[in-house]
Image (cartoon, rainbow, N blue to C red; front, side):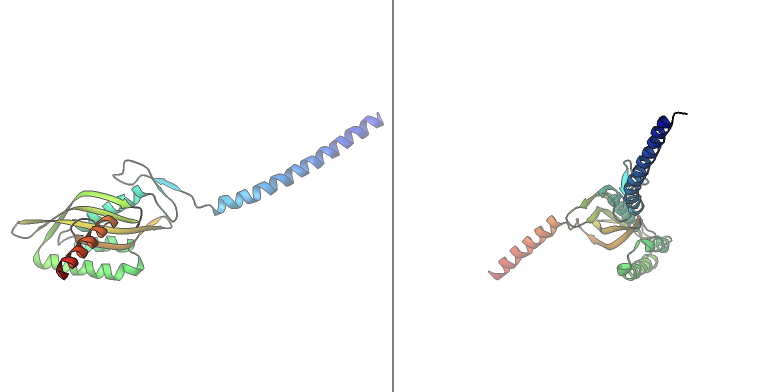
Length: 207
């Protein structure tokens, strides 16, 4: 056996082993922070809610505008189309989505509304005309016409708006605030118009 060749080969093996160790240490140094990033990263889920033709992206604590608008449409339709027989069920369906800060007030309001519908045998129908999300305030508005009918089959129509503030908590929607009122949506622009009208009215009254 050629001793010199053996020593050269053995030295090469040791050198390659050292290189391999260094490479493994380098891989570990890269993989540890990468693994931590993957584990702690909140995944984004792409969802296609019912009746929504486009994809909506929802993460653990937020959702895109289209998804929030769709949720508002669902809630407004649920609240706006009620009969004496189903109004209790509407309150039951809405309760899990209500934030603790407004849950009691909303449920009490729905119960009072239910009592009124049953007492007067009134049914409501809400026909949506428009819905949109306001970036500046995070509010979603659903606007349309409400038709109220009683036992005499006479329908009364009035403009109505449902206004929502919806957040996402652990991928689940939460209604942080809810308002329903007659007339058009009280957007920032509309509130500014109302304020200007009130100021003009006050100015006329001073004269």
